[in-house]
Image (tube, rainbow over all chains, first blue to last red; front, side, top):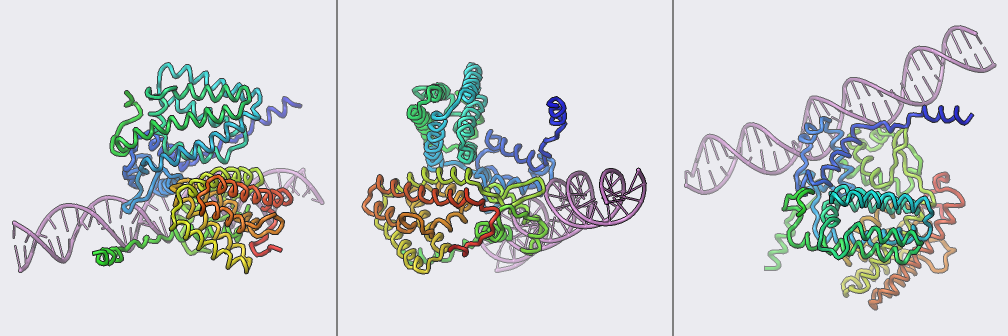
Length: 240
Length: 240
DNA sequence: TTCTCGTACGTGGTATACCATCATACGGTA
DNA sequence: TACCGTATGATGGTATACCACGTACGAGAA
């Protein structure tokens, strides 16, 4: 009976009927957050049509989506990749500090063993990859780490907001995660947060989280105020 | 010189070349937040085309925008007005409490006389209209009150987030602002916040703000858990 | 009478055609 | 030679046509 039900369950096709629009959305978003399209770059609709091999209807709807996300802004001559100045970044780090510390504290209060083990697994992966010191990979792990924290503690609305904010500062994050001039490296801070969660200590977890973000913000400030990120076309691999 | 500059300034044509899409966006968004389109209602593209007198291209881009905003969700049979359950609303109130109390405290620390007078004017308007007890008007005033607080204290990113969240719970807010079973009415709480700002007392301002939101959340909970807002098609005028 | 199969219509996905506007470049004229 | 006007190309805004899919309703058979 159960095997039959399982067999029937396995028949299920829940492949989200992936539309051209969704694929194009992911592609373009990735290109923006990875820095392939630098801030200020004009996104000419017909050019994107050729590059992605889809029609303008698709491209336009994707642009509308990304515009609402804040990754694209409409200049008077058309859509461009959103620029990021320190004033915006500062506010984003402030909001992250509020939302993430709240989620982390909440997670620390109610984390059960399965959540803890999931977080531990992610951090172990992160440590393994930290040897290669590949910032994008480290960033993915950090994102997953926080995704578990937010969703397991019932903060999925906040997670959606934070994820969207993070995509706007993703290039900054790549630089801050691996940079050397912070007292404690980013992954180490994540481990501090995890330790506090593991012993169910909300206060310590929130404090570590705030510390982690304020350090990242300070590094971001030096990056953004010295030279605007829009002007220098450094890719994610250009770290010293 | 200054008059000449002013004259030159006044020559400026910054009329946003209002596109059909923007007008349609505003119309549909208003219809949703006002409850004309109830949660769960199917938004059939061609029907909206007829109702607004525009083409499907426009409607589809608007739907994409509102979907990203969270006002519309895509069911498998097409877009529907997003439903709101208590789990989402609770998170939204939590996030508001964090962001608004932070902004209010910041505003209280650095509010100057012009900001204070702007806030006072809004509250005076609100008091005048409170006599009519017209919830939508009161809600507009409350929105403007917070808009001044956020933008004057340099929290415009957070304001964008809060505004978007608020549009998702606008129908709840209409009900909670005027409802009688709260210890202190919503407008009175706003005045408490204002008083704290006027004497530049961040702590008191933040406390009043948190109090205001937690009261609203409690009322919202009784509304949402007794009967889902999706099922009952009460307009904004159905207050007792 | 009931179950099943087929067809027709409605819906969303995609592509394309057309138009208004703006910027730029080229040529003519003072 | 310098300046102005026009023409052309590019770009975004809008409308429409076409297609695939899914659902619902009706007809026919058991």
